[in-house]
Image (tube, one colour):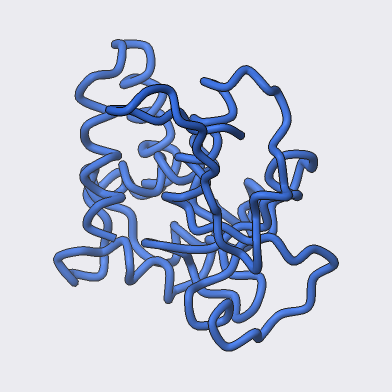
Length: 183
């Protein structure tokens, strides 16, 4: 969760005053008793009302509560705000845990669906899931794959380069000293 918290703080500090105010307003809406922190009861109540079903549980609250004092201060809250606003941190479709580090995504769903199908390393490695597609990429490789597609100007991924969940770059010799990736 450390990396996510760092990203959240970086985005906040580099955000516009309007974006910062949105974060403060959301924090204040969670802090029902006005004491400057959000306890687990406030957290679960508001997130349930706002429709964030996967986030509104005490286990996730504990992940956010970095100092373990059973309440979220504004900086701890920023991690939640980032997760909600960016919609970038999914839950494992196999076991349901919050994916706070490396995870695997179905490449086909990522490219062509409103919903992604994401797995923790343990569920992917242990094949503890059922899904109609077989091409999975970890989040770092997926980002690199998207970049190659963009640079190559192809528009759509060439899934023939995805083999058993691994991205296999195909290179064409440009000259003796360099090669260019082909998607």
